[in-house]
Length: 325
Image 1 (cartoon, rainbow, N blue to C red):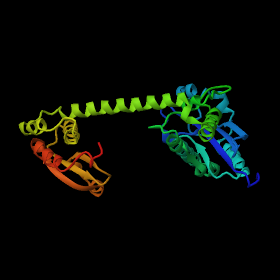
Image 2 (image 1 turned 60 degrees about the vertical axis):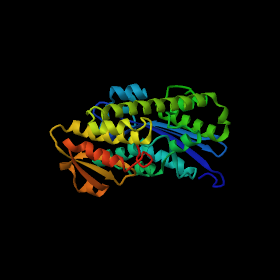
Image 3 (image 1 turned 180 degrees about the vertical axis):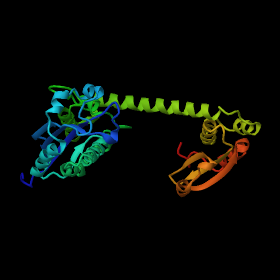
Image 4 (image 1 turned 90 degrees about the vertical axis):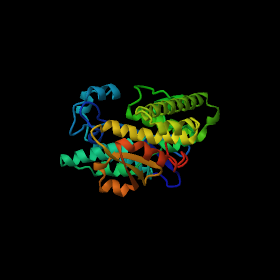
């Protein structure tokens, strides 16, 4: 092991089987890339290796297109558990406890590969050991950059001037290097004057606002897809359309209208006050089971013909400050 006086950081990326009939919970490791640097961000070692899946060794068209790997490469590759043993030796050599990755799928993918090994009665201890060291830094970096939501590695690394020397993104080693570049830049550069980052942030904010407006429009269309009663018309005409009260009315009515439309043969429904913070759920009464009883604090009965009465009664109890829309 290297001197314990120095600290080392490990960045990794894994590419998994995908496409056709392969569910994400059935995925297996296709390739692994690792980059290890010291506390001064000097790269000490890097590692890359493909691996041969057990359940789905034949690559799908989507997988070939995404990873640029060939079937011949995969056929001549070792088992992923053997590849993980090399990664374990590297992290142990440098006294590393956490393997940094981007996003929450790597842990899921490694867990899935573990299950496939167990399915075929093969050793998977090394995959499990690596899986326990996986640490997602996507949220951490996103907050450091003051982004409203995460972006992909390619877009972010490109903002810091990174371009793979050979190959492309979705190559495990290239993506591990990209993650190293991002992490290093965030901790060593003046990112407040990075115009490319500003553009990414601005674009994301605009997209979020666009999605919000589209969602509001769709919610309003759903809410008014069932004709308003005279009482509802009177109520709605006396409130500001941009007020919390109006938003609350539209929110709850859209929930009711959507459920009734999706269950045209049903007459009896329930408006549930869920224990999960500030959320409503509307269901046909017959679907109210023990699970929902445990998840809800209160259930209000209503029938198709009198939903308007219940809606107005419930709307007057809350403001949008109390309901997450």
